[in-house]
Amino acid sequence: MRITVENPGRSRKDKNLIYCLTQKVCDFEDDLQKTEAELANARAKLAKNVEGQTSFVRQLKEKYDKGMTSIKQNVNAFENEMAKQARDFKEERAHYYALIAQLEKDLQQLQEQNHTTEQIMDDLFRLQEDMAQRPAARPTGAAVEALMYS
Image 1: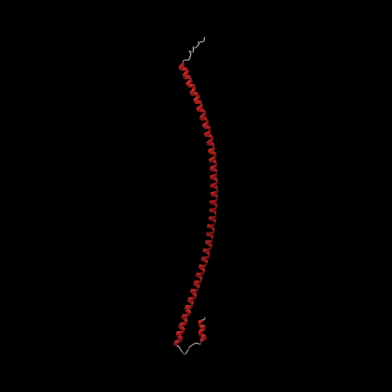
Image 2: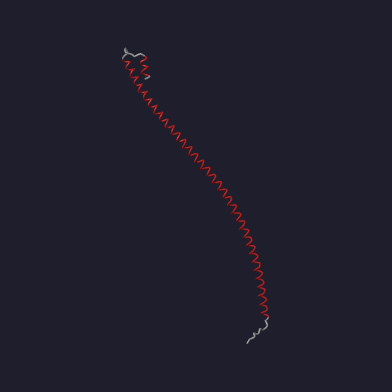
């Protein structure tokens, strides 16, 4: 068996409440549509900003890469110049050391010649003193010259 529910007629207060709730639902639907539209706009702006930022980042990376390439080229050029200067310095140093060694050798030779010359001069002075003490036995000029140049 069925029991029938009796629906009493709606009161004016209920109708008013239903009307207010219906209005609120309509307002909420309007707000929801506006919010969804704003969300779509925000997403579009965000996508546009991301594209712009991506482009900006790409440009910065290109500038960075160009700058780094230039810096690397400069560093390589400076390193090559530095290596060349180091080689040149080593060559010059070797040349100067060779010159110093030659000068030392020449100096040693001059010192030996000077020592020999001093010995010869000492011998000549002794001979002159001896000749001065013995005037009668003087050697001829040719003998003195032979002693001087021997």
